[in-house]
Length: 81
Image (cartoon, rainbow, N blue to C red; front, top):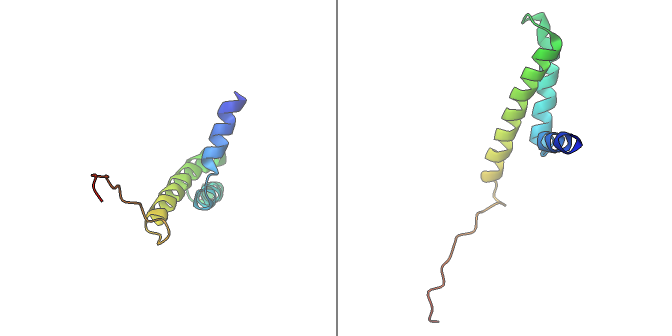
């Protein structure tokens, strides 16, 4: 049980973009009860999950477009000099 909890926590908080997206989603979920009817806990979990997804997407997108993370080309040695 503890191992599964640690895996979830480490997955959720793996990157700065993911952390910011999750926390902003949670806060938006708590504050959205004035505009959207529902329970604050369920709204917070829903918006937190959406924020986590957006943060994970941004982290992956920005990592691919960074100038420092160039992917190495695969080279095959064909013999000779």
